[in-house]
View 1 (cartoon, rainbow, N blue to C red):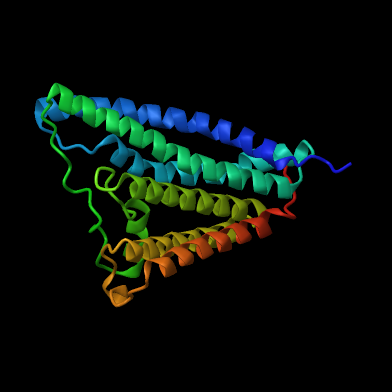
View 2: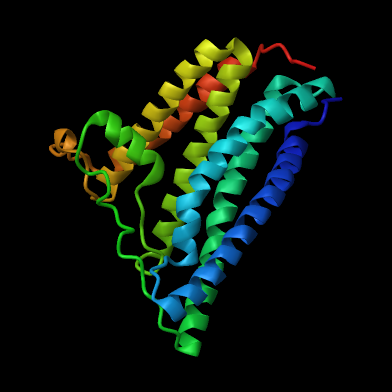
Length: 259
């Protein structure tokens, strides 16, 4: 009799564990958003919608839990008889689910926020600095650094479906590069870990560039002449994701587990 696949159970368990963390993360941001709303109403302080605020912070959150995916979950599952392949499949599926869930929750809360603000007729000062022009000019090193902070963005109120897709794609990439960094440090130590950080930055920059071209957003001057059809940019992004997953798999499939 064929043995039942284990990776769906791993994916479910990992999703709920990480969703619990994400729920706390979203809750903290909601409290901050309420405080900002009060300050914006009473003192005229600029603020973003909840969706925008989560969009900014979720990149670092996903990067961190991507790193934790190796150090926290790999030893646990392997020591309990789960193969490295099942761990890899389960973690990849869980990361996709989490990347979709966070934007959906953020969009629902943001819509409720906007509805209540309009219903109560509060005077909110929108933050005008949140746009896609940040980092459009400068050196490549500066661009890579700024891409960690300012990623391609679509306003929820202009195109909600595209906004959620772009959000999900962004944080999924950040989870993967966090997972890559964690795997690099775990497998080969500090030296390769530092190299994996450089690779991760390049992956983020390449994804931002391809996505910016697809969305017709500003890019660095040296890439301004690039004019790919949307489908070419989208294919390029998914090829980049596939390459990143392949590198993670190579780093984790024979890694010695540290008990």
